Structures are given as structure tokens and as C-alpha cells.
Image (cartoon, rainbow, N blue to C red; front, side, top):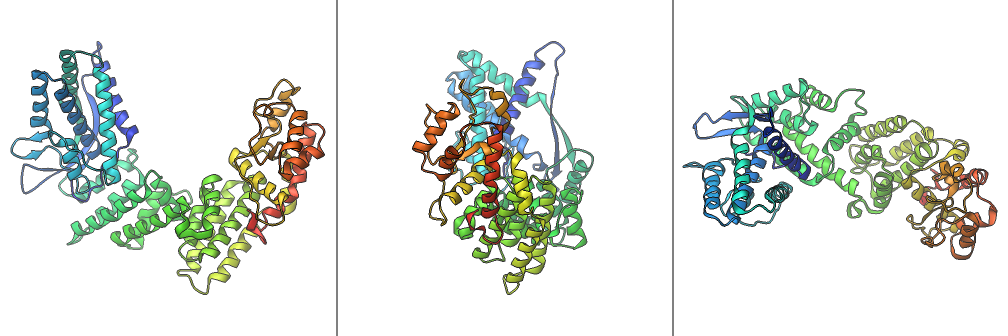
Length: 546
């Protein structure tokens, strides 16, 4: 592998698919008229011009590394059979497949994984080593998955039968898996091939395409050094993102700087921008890495960095799922004081609650507003300075102008059905406001109660009439504690008595005092009675209760 190539990235699902493909091929190839070969896909190689002993693998690392891991598993399981023929089998695998005579290992990974892969997979015997990087953990998991699969494959067979099964797997890997090999004479040609394959319908991921493009345009006297720098920045980004979606990050980074894509695909937009603005590829990779570090802090709602804004960001992005706010937060985070950032996020919670949760307006309008504000913040505030106050004013005025009015909110609650996360958030904040004028009491979001329950007992007459209202605002309350199992599904009289005698929350007590019966009419009426609390809590001029 070229030294700047990314580390081993296949996760459990990819390795399992690799094994399942082999197992399926083995089954089908044994049937009459079955396939003779299994196509593993194309690889891109570049011969070393200085020696015939080495070939650079520019694309195909994941498949060949996984095949090598499987060979090492066959070797180790062969040794475990404790018979002479199996030991010969294992040593033959090591000598002719995992290594090459007088040369070394058949596959040499890049600098990130070379030592770890050699010691834990290719050495005979392998040695345990701590998985320090994400790619190391992926290698470790791939080995675990394949070892388990092979041992299950041989099952309870005796040593001779088990060895025959291992030999059949070796034959598949040796002779029946085939690849199309695309040779190139330079790395730059390889990067062009990746883009061409993508243009012709073999869809590659945006991060891979972008990295290949940056590698290709790093074409100068010190191209190798630049590509190594690009790879280092990219690895930092991959490690930081963990299991999070890098495609999503790159899209959010783009729209936070330049606005919506307007129908253009993300890679084309990034490529055109870099070419037209003559952006240095190393500088661009560095920028991605820096933006990514802030993005991860926002996604994790890291209190150490975000201060008082952290719990509100967690509610907005994680609990309520409004990821469209991330580009705006990415633009705001580096330039605003944490106190101002907290205020901005509170305004965003007011906006999304009114706009999306309660009134249910077109989400594309919400995205348009957020993306435009993100771009304007970057334009107005390249650094935190005296522009903060007018920029904050602009953000608030923009959100207020686009948000539904109090009258629109009150008119919408009669038909307001909620998703579980929205319901817990909305009802807990309303219950907190009803409980106290000050903020020393905070209601636990987990104690959400359906008055008409999910599994109604026979005491509920005509439950089919109330089922459409299960998640209606008017059918929900907070209790302050988990409802007694004996009462959970009972009819309204029993639940009403429980609310009056047991719940310490004003919300539940008021519900019981106000309504003698529970039906569609009372559900809609109660929702209307909660509407003033919504307009009071989700208020741009006093958003502290959100």
C-alpha cells in the first residue's frame, strides 16, 4: 500500500458480507450448473518502476486485507486440529500465501496499520497487540468475525473432515475468487480512474472521491509530502468522527459556508469550488480536519467546550433530531462567546418547536433559513469581535420573522399529534412551567403518561375511537413518577383517582380536576388549554425555559 493510504476501514457488517458471499458461492458452486468463479470486483495497481518484486495497490486494500485475515484464520484453526496433515496445511498457507519466498509478506499495509497487521495477523504465530487506532480495532473485529465463522463452519466435524473443509475454503481463496486488475503508471492516473468510475455509475462515497481528488491535484515537486499531509489530516478526521457519517459532516460544512447545494451533488460542488478558487489541497484538508473537530464537539454536546449551551444543543440535535441546525451551529461556535451561543441555541429551540413540531410547516423552509443564517454569520463575523451584538440581533430578527405567530400556534394544537421524543420534550417543559414560576424545578422527561393508554383494558369502551389520539398533545401528561403497573392500562376513572392522590405535578392534578370523562372532545379541549403555555415557554424574548 502507498504510505499515505487510509487505514483498514471495513466494519463488522462488511466482513460478514464478505464471508456470506464466500459461503453462498461455495454452496452454489457445488450444485449442478453452479458458478465456477466468484467476482470480487476491480483493483487498481501500479507496478514499482524500480523493481519487479513490488506492486502498489491503489484500490482494493479492504478486500485483500480481509482475504489475508481469513487466510490467517485458516492457518490458526489448522494448527488447532493437532494432526500432522493439518500442521502441514497451516505451514503451507503461511509460506505460500501470507508470505512470499525471499520477499516478505504478500500484502504490506500503509504506515497506519503495517506493524499492527503484521504482528496480529501475518506473523506465525500472531502476537497480541493493543488496538490503538480505529483501523486497528476494525482489523481486530474482522479477525473475530471470521474466526467465529470458520469455527462454526467446521462445526463438530472430526479432524480429517474439518481439514477437508479448511482446504475447500483455501481453494476458493486461491483459485475461485477473481478480480479485474486495472494497471496505471502513476498515482495521478489512479485518482482520475476513481472519478471516471464514479461518473460512469459505480458510485463511490463523497469522502473517498474528495480524498482522491485532493491527492490528484497535489501534483508538484513535493507531491509525496503533500499527499502524506493530506492523508494525516484525513486520518485525524476519520478518527474523530468514529461511527458518525462523514458524508453528513461534509455536506453540513459546505452549506454552513456557501448555502444550499441547489440540486448539485456534493462532490461536484466541492470539486468546482476547489478548482475555481485554486484552493491548495493541503489547506483544504487541514480546514476539513479543523471543522470536523468542532463538528464532533457539537454533535457530542461537549460541556467542556460548549459550556451552558451544551444541554440545549443535545436537546436540539440529538433528542429532537434537528441535524439541519448543525451548519448554523458550526458557523456560530467558533466566533460567539459561550453565553451568546447558548442564547442562539435557545432561539433555535423556540423556532423549531413553533415551526416544525407544533405548526408542522415545510421542513425545507427551516433548512433554508438555517443555511442562509450560517452563511451570513461566516460573512459578518470572520472572528469574534464587535460584530457580535448586531449579528445576534440579525439572527433573532430572522428567526422571529420566519416563525409562526402565537395565533398560528394556538390554532394548530387541536390537531397536534407528536412523535415520542417531541412529546417528552414538549410536555416536560410545559409541566415545569405549570409547576413553578421560577426554574428550580425541572420535570424528568422520562415520566410521560398517555391518559388513553397504549394497551387499553376492557374498561375503555370503543377504544378504536381514541386510538388515533394516542400521541395527541391533549392525551399526554407528565406524572413525576412512573405510573403504577396496576393502573397503567385501566379506564379513566381509575387513572383520574391515581393522578389526584399520587402525582405531585400540577399538570396531572389539573387534568384530573378539570375532566370527568375522557373522549375526543376532552382531548382536544385540553390541548387548547395547553396552548398558552406553549407560546409562553417557546418565546423569543424569554427563551430560558426551553
